[in-house]
Amino acid sequence: MAADEASHPLEARHLGKTYRNRNWTGRRLETEALRDLALTVRRGEVYGLVGHNGSGKSTTLKLALGLIFPSRGRIRVNGYPSGDARGREDLGFLPENPSLMPHIPARQLLSGAGRVRGLHRQPARAHADQLLERLGLTEVAGKPIQQYSKGMAQRAAIGFALAGRPRFLILDEPMTGLDPLWRHHVTELLRDFCQEGGTILFSSHILSDVERIADRVGIFNQGRLIREARPTDLLGEQLTGYTVRFRGARAPDGWEAIEEGAGLWRTALPAADLWAALNTLQQDGLELLEIQPKGTGLEGTFIAATGEAPAPNA
Ligand SMILES: Nc1ncnc2c1ncn2[C@@H]1O[C@H](COP(=O)(O)OP(=O)(O)OP(=O)(O)O)[C@@H](O)[C@H]1O
Image (cartoon, rainbow, N blue to C red; front, side, top):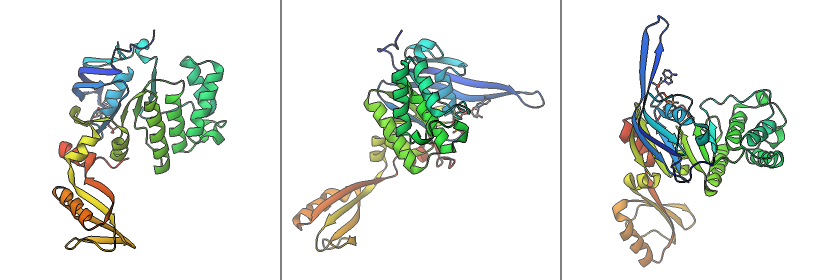
């Protein structure tokens, strides 16, 4: 049975998780990792989870994948209780610490994953090759994954999540171990996945990536979802002013502007002064080149909501 089109890819209500363990002396330990979570991921959106270490992001993703059971409340994937095979048919996932089969070459692993997700041999191989190309792994696709660098293994794991054309991706820290160039390429790959109608739920400590990819962001703190927002709204909320670039022989009288090159100027303005400044530029016959909003965006909201900057382990 195909995933239920009418259902949200993910829906959690009053979801809670308490881990119960024993320490080395045998004493019982309880960790309340997630409390009363209400979360809906809509079809076609990219939803990013951010939060400090230990705030409950991976627990949420593991519950969604059915790898652990809720202690309270419910979580449904494509309309089915998480862990139900019917809800997982169109699901691709990247776990927190992906350990792909080390002796198997990436090409074999990705085309095998495609076959498991229902593609025939040829389309599975073709799609695997396409992914390997985009992930820069074509040259090493025949080598066992244990010979890959950390970043290459992470890219292979992302390919594994995407193999077989899933429609819903759950990714725990997809950018871990990737250099800025590959973060950029993976961002593009995920964007294309969404352009084709895919849905993504992911966690990340790299707030600039979250801002670039996510349609909505959920900020976690001590096991609670304390804030949901669209990154574009956060920029407006945290707006401190604008940087304006313009061209002309000289800057308007009284302006503090820096000449960046011959006849190219830059000035910083408080948000309230923008319209008056644009009028002045027009009256003085100066050419407006760029208006860039300045704000602290997601990072500012994150600090305001949780009281601290994000963990630097990205
Ligand atoms: N298997 C487990 N047994 C006991 N406690 C656990 C277990 N897994 C996670 N926890 C605890 O649950 C809480 C939430 O952990 P979780 O892994 O969900 O956080 P996270 O937000 O993903 O953190 P990080 O950013 O470090 O990956 C933490 O206090 C953690 O120590």
